[in-house]
Amino acid sequence: MTGIENAVELLRDRRVAVLTGAGISTDSGIPAYRGAGARTRANPMTIQTYLADEAARRRYWLGGHLGWLAFTAPDPNEGHLALARMERAGTVNGIVTQNVDGLHLRAGSTRVVEIHGTMHRTLCLDCGQVFDRRAIAEQLETLNPWVRKPENIELNPDGDVTPESTEGFVIPPCTVCGGMLKPEVVFFGEFVPPARFRTAESVVNAADALLVAGTSLTVNSGIRIIERARRRGIPLVIVNREPTRADAWADVVISGGTSPVLSALADALA
Image (tube, rainbow, N blue to C red; front, top):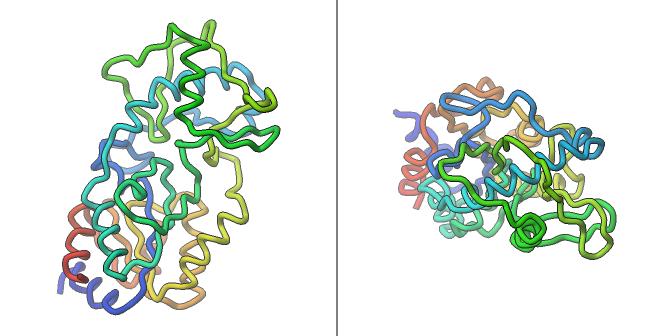
């Protein structure tokens, strides 16, 4: 039997929780952090740097704005659509994603926990007000009318680019209290909010199997989800082009792209 056939046999007639990472979005044109073709970053933004360094915040917001249209333009791919089909068929009971691109929701999945947050919302760190990112983008362009989206930019995995200069750039303040804004994403060095992780756990606790797709499981939040599934003794299926930290624990490992594999699983489990 092939890996897909083994996975189908294992997942059939079970409620399946899904954990996804950047690898599921590469077919939509969003680069991954790791693996073949990944665009590595020498100095990713940390929460400590963001809070302490105004110049770093300017670079982050300018780069984030320049990458905004490129980041929001990609459409869901066959992998996202396959998982949405499996939810409608009653196979998938929920998705926990490490991605911040919102593509699972755009594909039609409704039970999605964005464990690392989303680039589509912005949070005030002082008063807690949440804003639509589009509104912040409009304010940013009003404050910085010289900002334009360059052609052929190199997009980073979290939807920003590396600007050449931030001279004269003004960061929009919170319109409620004038406080510091931050995209509603979990930065390096920052913890996943406990309530959000409990929601992710509830997806796994309500499932009879866990399907992992498009993540090397390098980030600890993903491993924590795997550990919850292991404690319950439910079957584990992993789909990824590269080896992962949890391959030794999996019942089935499929080395391949998420789009064709998830589409095949959706067809077989329908």
